[in-house]
Length: 372
Image (cartoon, rainbow, N blue to C red; front, side, top):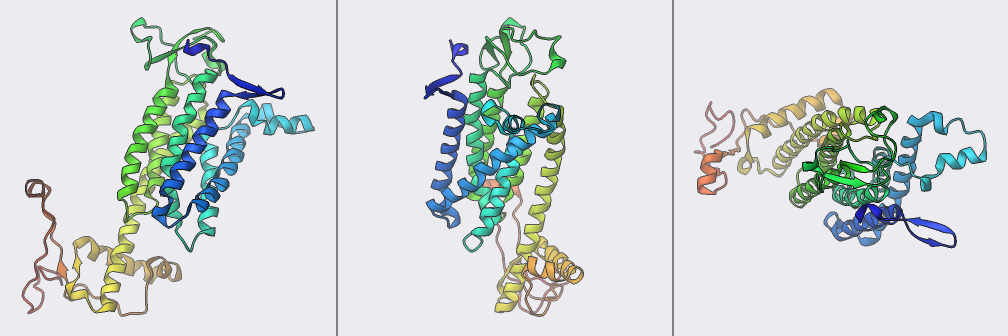
């Protein structure tokens, strides 16, 4: 019964409206609704969220189409006539890749963030859109079922021929010629429900990222790295069993997954360095260093930032927010050494780290400038 769904939902004036298009639009609307609901957390209003939507979606469609047609040069190039141009832009005939869509959407976020730079920053906007994008992708994958595409390898074992492991398709479409020896073209049968696997994978990611979004204050933009790692890791695994997999997609995923992981870790370290530097300089400027808690990471990060400013010049002065105040020598300065309770003890006592001030007769050699 499910495999018998007609791809065309209805017809208006001779124009066929496909279920896939309606599903994609519904996914966009759900994503927009989430953005509108959550945008106030980063000092934006509903009209700002709509503007963000209008920047992201058209650019996502344009770049999604470009990245789809460029690897298929034999089919779409050269463009020598009006009909060739129409064929090149004919998204209504199918052919948009998510990787290009993500690139276009990211460009839209950059443009919007620049326009709204007095209200919020780029990192906040990235965090705002990650969960809505995943929600749209989850819904959009339902369109692959209606179109009977984006499925996986044939399932011949009768014990596995049931949903959600497999899906029965009466008119399977879209697998590459290299799989012709596995399945005859358009032969009905049971296939791995890879589009459903991706829906579940993205749903898990959306739940995790939503929790991070509500808690994350220190690292604006970190969800962008999380998204690239999570989505392309799942896509990399699914590309191994999808019959319509394009080799360039698997290569792109294999590159982006470790790159996102390394870049995300580097971004967190950079943010921690900047936060530590600003904590120390702010305390020194306000004369409150003696009552400020610093841990060993703050001390090390402050020293690292000083070296970067000394060698990097104006850019690092701007990045760290350096001010014209004397450099603090934390080896001799008074501050409170922040003690971290071991996780075993913290789990038993459910208590946070405590800081205790030492006698005021100066730091000991073991304290390296701090007071315990």
